[in-house]
Image (cartoon, helix red, strand yellow):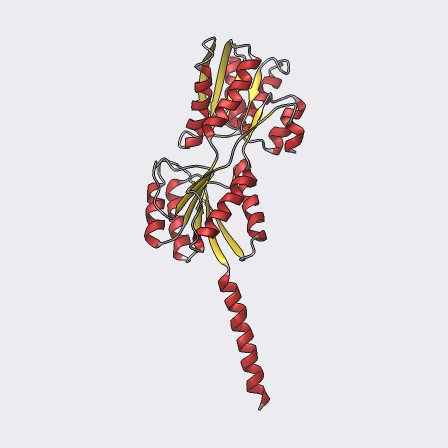
Length: 309
């Protein structure tokens, strides 16, 4: 007679256990690409943040491999899996309208992280967690312009041209240069965020006999590549200023060694925490203080680099 009671108790325990699992907030995270140094830190920091959330947050990451159509398909698949919220690091910031449309139509909260869509106004239930890329360009160029004494020529290593971070950071550089008519831009070419491409382009400029005083790179990876090319060409360390953006561990070490002159810290942990917090709040039907969450940039110099390690 006791057996059915024990079975019922067991069944109840299993049901309660399943209920607890179902209570977890499931967040689909669509990354533009896994094969990117800074985005790897962002992904790792999101995972770490999710583990600290009291509500129980599970993340499912997908890798678009820099393919716009693949990312759209992945977002649709995540919606089909009934995630409670979406976090998207877009491949192309000009191609986010379709992602926004399908998420809103499905009633799934959406948070864009690191790269803000080009759409000037986003609907309710959609938020952004980014940093002001124009400010990053301003910070690195102002520091380098002062080091150059307001005269000379510079090269700009651009990121992916489909990414508005590239435009923002470059606009910031050019905004500062308006105050320094003695500094001219010799070349600006895309290194698509790659260390190897940054090295190849810089090596080409050296081989062509171009005389330049600084390299302004949209990220640390390209800046490190530029520094490597300068070193291989026998340029004296510090004779050409090299600036990056991100403050990655490799970038910080390059500043410590004197290979990079300066960088601008992009807070991966701050963006990760902001994105997870926003996604969870929206999934719980809570109101965000602002749809637009901005994590500030900070200048990294040889004098303060130790504070970022």
